[in-house]
Length: 109
Image (tube, rainbow, N blue to C red; front, top):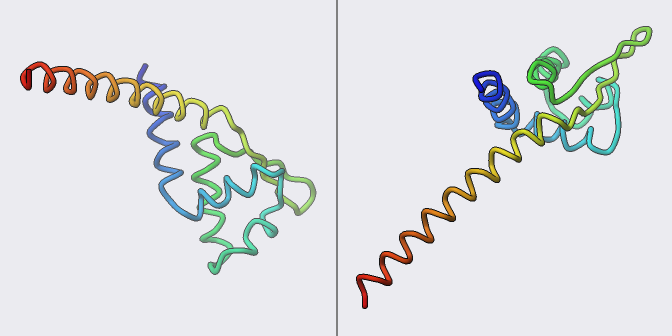
């Protein structure tokens, strides 16, 4: 369980930044080279590659180097783990809110 929790933590940390969310969104339509990914951002390439490093460290992307070109690919499995966590949280809170609603209705009567 600690590895699962650590993975969820790193995924949410990575997705907490708008630049990294935009990169994940872009890679959802297919792989891209670093230079192509960086075009839409007003930051120096070293700063942008740090964002890619965070995404790669948490497992949301992987990269391959061919010659001088590094291409990034989306790895959707960590997103699924985060989604599963959110679904469980939603179920928990819906159940708690239903219990509160039932309680409030019972004391109203």
